[in-house]
Image (cartoon, rainbow, N blue to C red):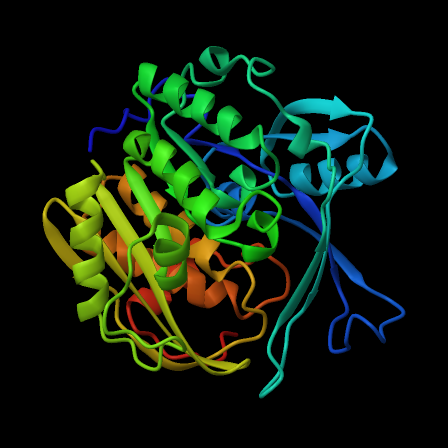
Length: 352
């Protein structure tokens, strides 16, 4: 995988996706809360923000926001995260995402309100992608954005084709969401759309459900609830995927949820014809699981962008994802020193 050198680059990564306002009821339920904390978040955006705030790279997000006070609040939160904003204003609405963290036997719960949002109205021809990718090194988008409307996948395709013309690496997180695809044709249409985009993808990301529902590759031998982190079935699934599509890297997060607050967590990466596994973290304590996979992607991409080997990169991604799930919100609050310390196996002793 040939990555542009850092010199003379404007952006290390450009993301395409929706940025929503997340409403967090803290320790309460959505239906009983009277006050909420607010954060910005979105599957593709979270990767850009993690790369900026934790790893110090220059990133931008291409999106669309309604030109109203809520849109300006989201824009302000994007700027606080250090990410450049490039997009179009709309006379529409902004996406809202209500998310419970869950606890013990009560699972985390997401309730998004994102119908007819500004970003879902984006159409091919509205963004000058050749201008965007001058001096960019990496482009990231995914299945959440492509499921927003019947035109979103065409926008992603247009962006990917432009990225290829400019020698920019393309990554795609399948991020299958049944609630988003149900009005567009469900799993069958998700597989059609993702299958059309997959030949342009250099780095394919996801979890076991994403590859099965979103791309049609079954993880043989893994039960529905993923009761172990045995990587054998995932290796076979990845081998099948790279036989069909020209992926240079495939990476998957592995999670077994014993409870909402205790998960087994790991990751596997295929690159250069070999497999690399991050250390499995048994019974990892979870504060807020949302964004763990996006933070994994940010750490993995950071490793490749900075010239590290696949083993270091997947270890970095898994460590960053683990740390992101110890704080509230979709986005990471970890620092690079936090990530390196966890990769080195340092204990969680108090630092004074």
